Image (cartoon, rainbow, N blue to C red; front, side, top):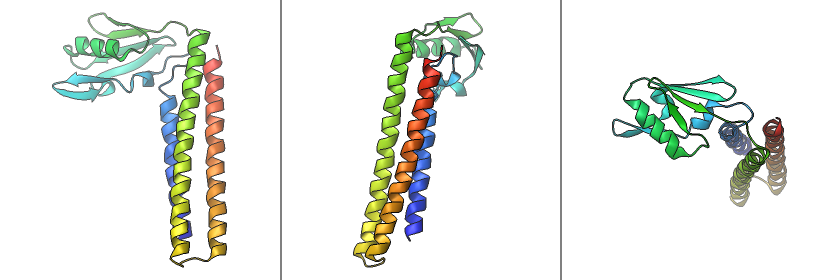
Length: 185
């Protein structure tokens, strides 16, 4: 029973760590990253569809993203969706592609992205702490129902805390590495 609780906590923590890494891909570093467009949705025949499902999105060099729609009429729709998303660049439509030219990042932009990365890390830590609370509540219930002894419960609480500490340090390490990457010119 206790092992199930601990395994569930680890599984949930792994998902939180993966979500953090996915969030990090939306932050711009020195090189452009096509994942900065992941949250953009376009109107595709009446339904909102992710941009990467209606066009080919490529980083053609360190400062340019090229978006080639699969259907020509989508050019204007993609262009207006990117403009509305306010990602810091204006889309350029050349009749075939929409190109995004990203200027070099300023020190202030880099520092702002570091703040965002730290906020994302804090959000992940809150999630980890919520998983700890859920696991502790489950152990408390087992102890109350007399399914486990007080000593077993104490050991389980200690193990839950070790797991929480381990994932918290992984998050801190990820945020630190992202900060180094963001500040590198």
